[in-house]
Structure formats: C-alpha cells, structure tokens
Image (cartoon, rainbow over all chains, first blue to last red; front, side, top):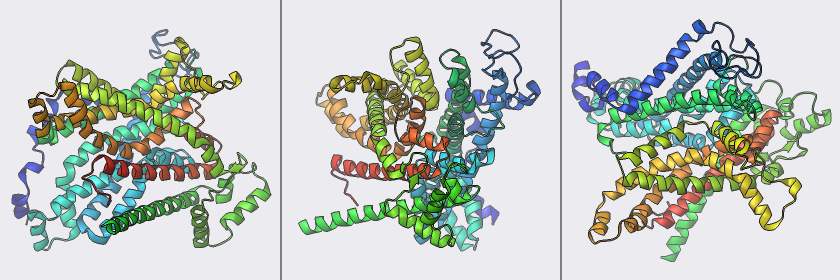
Length: 293
Length: 330
C-alpha cells in the first residue's frame, strides 16, 4: 500500500528538503524576514531571564526618555514601567496569540475546506454558505464583539481571532482539494478501499501543505495586528503586557512624550513585516513557477 | 428575447435578495448565540452593567426578548425582531439602535469613500510606475514602501501622523469632524470638514494603498505581455496612451474585485481610525458601545456592517458586468 502511494504521488508537489531551504534562503526578502523573526523569537525566549520582574510593575521614575538612563534603554512610561521589559514580554504575548490563533484558524479552515472539497454536493453547498457568511462579517468588528462579550483574556482573544480568520483559508483548501479529488492518486486509494479520513489525511492534506504554510505565515502576521488593535482599544488581557496596549497607554501622553506610543508600535511593525516577508519568500520558494508577481 | 432578459434579471435579483436575507438571519443567529455566551443574564448584559438600568427597563427588555420563555422561542423572537428592522433600544444613548446607526453612517461613508479614492488613485499610480520600471530602483522603492504600509498598524500610523502634522507642524486638527464653535457655513464648512478629514483618510487609506500598489503592479505586468498591448505598441501608440487606454482599463477589474473583498477590513480599520481621530462615525460608535458595554448596540453595528458588505459586493458585481460586457450577471 505504502509503496503504491509513494509512486503515485506527484513528485513536484512536495517540497524537497535541501533544495527548498536553499531556495528560501537565497531570497533576500525571506532571509530578512527569517532574521527579524529570529530576533523577535530570541527576545521572547530571553524575556523572563533578562526581565524577571512583572513588566507591569513600576520600576523607575516616570517619563524617563530613551537614552536618559542606561539601565532603561527605551525609557519608562507615565507609570514608571520599563518600556524595554514591556517590549520583551510583549513579544511573548504577540507570538503566542498569533501562533495559537492561527492554529485554531487552520484547524477550522482546513477541516471545512477539505470536507467541502472532498465530499462535494450538498455538504459542499452548506459548508460554503457558512464560509460565505463568515466572510461577509467584517472580521475585526466580529473579533471585537466576541472579545467584548466574553471579556478580554488570552483564551477569548485567541478564540475570537481564530474564529474570524479562517474563511479565506477554507476557500483555498477547498480549491486545492477539488483539484486533487479526481487525481489518479486519490482514485487509486479509493479503489484500494481507503477510508475517507485516511485518504484526506494521508494523501490529500500533504499535497495541500505548501499553500497552507504560505497562508499561515501571513495569518500569524494578521493575527498579531488584530491582537494589537484589540489591545489598543482596551480589549487586551489586563494581566499581561501587550504591544498594542502599550501604544494605547502612550496615546494619553502623545503631545509631550510621544516615544511611549512610538516604540511599541515599531515592534509591531517589525513583527508583522518579518512574517509578511517570510510569507512572500515561502510563496516564491514553494511555487517557483508562479514567480512573476 | 426581452422576456428572457427580464426573467433572468428577476431571477438574479431574487437570488440576491434571498442571499441578503440569509446573511441577515445567519448573523442574527450568531449574535443571538454570542449573547448567550456572555456571562450573566442576557438582560443585564444588554442593559450594560447591573445597577445602571432601571427595573422597568430590565422588565421591558425581558418582555421584548421573551427571556422568561424557552430558548427556541427566544431565538424566534430575536430573529423576528431583526427581520422587522427592530434592532432594539440603546439604554445608554436613550435612542433606538437603528436611529443611532443611521445618524453615524454618513460620516463613516465619507471617510471610507475618500480613503478608498485616495488609496486607489495613488496606489494605482505607484503600481503603474513600479510595473513600468520593474526590477529597477523605482520599483524596489515603491514595493518596499508598500510592504511597510502593509505591515504598519493603522492606529499607530494615525498617532504618528498626529504627532508630526498636528503637534509639531500644527498644520491639521488633531481630531473631530469640524470646528463646532466656529459655526462655519457653506464653502467654509466644507473646507473645515476637509481639513479634519485629511489625516483620518490618509491613515485609513495607507493600508489599502499598499494593497492597490501590489495589485496594480501585478495586473499591469500581466496585461503588458498580452497580444493586444503588443499590437498597440507595434502600431505606434504612444506609451502613456497604451498605459491609460489598454493596460489600465483591464487592470481596473481586479482592482474592483479587491474593493469587494476588502470592504470588511476597511470597516474594521474605520473603527480604529475613528477612535484615534474622534471621527463621529459608525466605528467611533462601536468603540463607545464597547466602552459602555452597550452590547445590543455593538451587535447592531456588527449586523449593519455586514449588510453594508453585502450591498457593496452587489454593487461590485453590477459594476463588473457594466465594465466588462463579457460577464453576465448569474
């Protein structure tokens, strides 16, 4: 069984490991994205070691400008909280929420897309209607309503972003599955008596992986943007520090101490930029033939 | 022949109306279950924090939503209310939700319209330039700029523009829609609103400018390679005329499709921009509703925004069929 499947799988659709990595690293955009992302990851990992105290605690005099005191390179905000500590700990929260929310979206989106594409007919019609409905509701307003109703906390924010971000992925997966549904490989598996679940998980999903990975990195970027926007509006988890929440707090002193809002915003830009660059690079490396865009 | 067309058009509009009704019922269903998820009795949730509402109001709400009845009955009642355009009453504002939303919609439409116009115009120009000089310095500069705009949170751009243009340079107002105390009329009033509109419109527009730049660049590159463009070049049509008449026209279609796809996120961006600039629109209303825990109002805004998305997509379809006669409404 396994040998038959392997020989039937289209060789080009699965990224070959060494070639793929080399292709990815040879693109300046992907390399920049990976480096930036590496920096942010390191900040997230180093946060508890470098700044063991709660970033929400007052540690120095308020309104210390960046550079004024070497112990606080990014200064302190109006409550005397260390901005550098907030940036490091905020990286953890942004990445955590971005990644987990994207996993939630992928589970929903791949499930619905694969189900609709594989079964077709009435199941497809119903699932696509649901997808259309979710696509019609403005995603940010939807997430905002969910978090407002459930009260802001990390699980409610993750859930809200996950539940609002999947429709485009479901459409993408459905389109890819439709292409594979009638391929010889899948038909052969059906003839050999493979169960639906087995065929979907073992034969179809691995071939859908490439576009899903590309979409996922952009989805993490969007999730980080959504999380920071929610936190900016006051819908962040009150017990943890968030870049968007820091910008929101800095807004109050924008006129005199604009750095309080500027610095955490730059962190958001870098994180989102890194993931978008990586997404572009992955797209180019995984689909070398659709390069001209 | 004419009869066939009429029947077809009727079928089209019938389907669109059915689709719209389905969307409204679907969103109402989602809203209903969201309210069920809220901690505490739905009535206290609807009324805001407990204690702020009078017992009579709570009783009226219970009666309106039939909360003393079984869940399916409650659900039927909720859907019934919404299908008759009764979105309920906002205790905080002492007005019907419908009235509040209708009051705020024009400001949001003005903001979104100007932003989209700005983004489409400048974005297309950038895209055309980038495609003309593909691979060269101008292209790299524009593409990098687009990537940066795409990655920058809307609310942060807004704050930074305020710091530069309102605080440091003092060129433009910090927020609001007009200088009420000045009592301008006529042309002065229009100029006053325009001055207040610049920063919010640019802020909301920058993200979509990035999208339009990338889209237009790709579309231009694609159309450039096609036979009719090569023919036009070969017969000696001047370059800018080729761009305007042959290439841009064909690149318009994906631009319009993009508008339909992005309208939902434009509405989401409007919440943030209106909050930053105190622009008195739907988004600002959503923020106020959020702040005051006026959930009924918030869900009403969610429903109306979704209906706006459906209507814009309908308009996009019609526009599409009008611009490209090969496409039939189906």
